[in-house]
Every structure is written in C-alpha cells, then in structure tokens.
Image 1 (cartoon, rainbow, N blue to C red):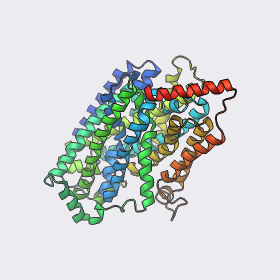
Image 2 (image 1 turned 90 degrees about the horizontal axis):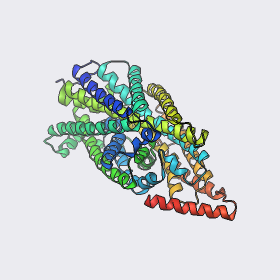
Image 3 (image 1 turned 30 degrees about the vertical axis):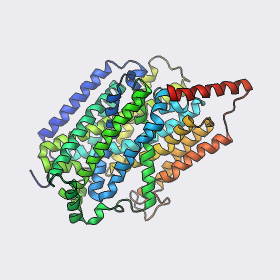
Image 4 (image 1 turned 180 degrees about the horizontal axis):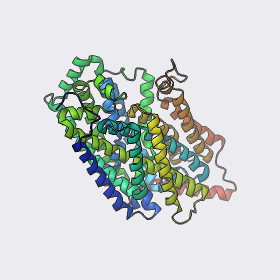
Length: 518
C-alpha cells in the first residue's frame, strides 16, 4: 500500500467492482422494463413500493455525490464549516414529515404540480411548476455529472468529457426502459452499498486513532491548526451561513425527485413511515461523513486532495486507497459511481415527468393524451435531459459538488416550497398567486446566483459581485412567499355566480378533508 493515492491507472479489481454494479443495475432495469407498461408504473412504480423499501430509496435519492464526495471533500479542506451541509440537509426532513409527506400523497398523482393545481387553474400552475422543477434538476445534475466525471477520470485515466458521456448514457438507459420501478430498486441497492462502504471506511479511519473520535479531531487541530474545529473557514459571513442553512432546510421539501417518491407507496401512512426510516438512515450516514472528512484531512492532507481534484471531491476515494489499497479504492469508487448513477436516474425521471405529465399531457393535451403518448414523450424528454446533463457536466468541470447542490436547494426552496405550502394550507391562494410565487422564486434565485460571488468572483474572476451572498435563499424564500400572498390578495380566484362560489367552497372543503384523511 502506497502512502500517496495513485489515480489514473486502470485497476482490474476496480473494473470488476464497476462491472458487478453495472450488471446488477442493468438486470434490475431489464426486470423492471417487463413490468412498466402504463404511466402509473413509469412514474410511480404502480404504487406498489412498501414503506421500508421507499425509506431506503428516499435515503438513496438523498445521499448523493454531494453527500459522499462533496461533504467529505469540504470537511477535509475547510474543516468544521463543511458540516453545515450535513446539518442543513438533515434538519430539512422534519419539514417533509410534518408538512409535506401526507398532503402530497393524498392529493397528487405523479408530480408536486398535481398538488398545487388541485384546486387552481392547472395550466398556468403547471407551466410555472415545470420552470422551477427543471431549473432545480439542472443544477442538481451538474453536481452529479461533475462528481462522476472526476471519479471515472481519476480512477481509469480516461478523459473527463468521455467519463461524463458514459454516465449520461447509463442514466438514460435506466430511465428509458425501467422507469420508477428500476430507479427505486437501483436506489435501494445503492443505499445499502453506500451505508456499508461508508461505515467500513469510517471504521478504518477510527482504527488509526484507537476508535476515539476525539483523538481524530485533536490530530486535525495539531496538524492544521485549531481553526479547523471552529466555524468561519469556509463560510465567514454569518448571513451566508444563515442563507445556506435556509436553502438546505427548506429545499428538501421542494426537490422534485424526492417529492415523486411519495407517490410510489400505497397510502399516506406508508409515506410518513418511509420518511422516518429515511431520516434515520441519512442521519447515520452524515455522522460518518464527519469522520471521513477529518480522516482525509489528517491522513491524506488538504494540499494532496486539491492537487488531484480542485474541488476536493476525491477526498473519500483517496482516503480509501490509503487505508485499504487499490481493492478498497475500487469498491468505494464503485459505490460512489452507484450513488451518482442512481441519483441522476431519479433526477431524469422527475424532469421527464415535468415535461411529459405537467406540460404535454396536462397543458398541451389538456388532460387527454393519446394512449401511450405520455410515456413516449417522457422517454424523449429523458434523452434530452441526458444530453443537457452531459453538456452541463463538461461546462462546470472542477466545481465542488456539495456547493453546486446547495444552489439547487436554493431554487427548490424558493420556487417550489412556498407555492406548495400556500396551496395546501392557505385557502385564499389564487392561481395567479401560486404561479407568480413559482416564477419569481425561480427567476430571482437564478438571477442572484448569476450575480453572486460564486459566479462573479469564483468563476469569472471579477474583484467583487453585484449580490453579496453566495447562496440567495435568505432573500428569495421570503420574496417567493410574499409574492404568492400579495398577488393572491390582489388577484383572487373569481368564483363568479353565488352558485359557483358555493361549489368552490365545497370543493375547497373536500380537498382539505382529503389532505388530512386521504
């Protein structure tokens, strides 16, 4: 075993691990393809997924490349501050449990736009929802593709661009043929592998320090200064920290590929149970990223990590090679690759649903698509999304994947979450208010990201930025809520005649009953 990780040389053991995972997932896809015939099977796995299975699949969807590669990388290069991502992503789940899970399952069919449009004019609502969904998915896909490209390039020595193309094609195959059923079981397999791999790697790290985490942290402070155990090294501006925390906490309840998972279970009770299971698994995993990040900082070193990948995304694989040799590196790299493939498949499926179900079937065909047409459009959309993912992955080479996902969460928290809460819990929400909330949330977040230091200073090299915060959620979430409320009050839904008003009131009452009781 070498003290310096050796990347870029193909290894038979690593190739074998990759081959085994690809074979398993392709087998799952073939099995699922034989059972995917209707839109309900393609989008929601026939609503046949149990609470336990969906809990593991939710955890698999959530424990992305940002979690495994990005957080470990940020902690290894920045210390304590990198854990703001772990904390923010985890505390978002109570919001999902208590506000979102049951209403979503009770009211919707395939996408979160079904819920927002339940008692409003569906056309403007679905168009606005699709805008926010696709923007969120685009930023999330960037992170996964960058992580996958870096991983395969550094492990096998092939060009980064070729690696990104391979991931895009694999993602396309899973969704095209297997739909939600294949994606669900790929997520379950990936969640088990990721938890097992991370636990083994964390145990190897702790074994170097007498299985005493305090000794690990003391070694980090002794080697790199006490500042690595205190906040301020990565996020020095407290307003940046608050803004990022809000994005991570509320963005969870607006992520389209997470929200779609609640339609795969048979009822709201199963949806709630699956969230509890997922929260436990995710919390356990994030505790392990704490150990992996500081372990990489002490044993590998920030400078060595940055010399291999500027974004720090290869900290965990480098740590695996150092502690377990090339065979263990191959296993951890295969697990990371499984993580990325499973998440991009879920993202592609939610994007395809936004295009085919929300736009094509519900808006263009006005709820009456031809038989089989919706699935065909979804598969064409999957091909388009795969191409977009490849282009974005190449364009954002070298970015830290956890940071990029933080921006995706800001869009989800601003574009999707406010409209979802207002439409479910505030009866006076109007069509104009919900649509305006989603449009303003999406466009303002994208605009502020473009004007932020993350783009103006870090990417474009300018001395300063027009907007001071790296993550704009502190401004855009209240702005989206305020827009929805003000526009709803100024442009309420007009009931028309007293009879129409009475029917609308009765419909609202029925929907509220359905939200609570199913």
